Image (cartoon, rainbow, N blue to C red):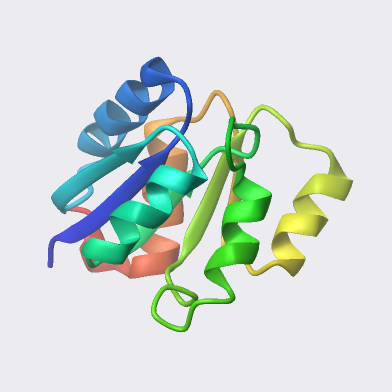
Length: 129
């Protein structure tokens, strides 16, 4: 089964690297969407069916924390699995995001193996070829 994945990061380079990493990890992607911040991400989610989100924490306009909090208030998008990918990895931050319902937290730089494991854990073993 192919999945619709949304990558949210204010860095074009990080989004590009994550797209390439998903390919290297053989993740079965139907459509890949990108957003610079949480505001853009919410606009995409309003019009598209998204199966998995990768998001940064620190972004302009709306960061990852506010995005996840906003998603939980909307019954149509509150159950979309969220994976945080950030340079910020303090125990306090990881615990905060886990309490908000984030399914996984990866530190930058990430690896294809790490991405593949997270996707398989969340979407199931058949998500990666």
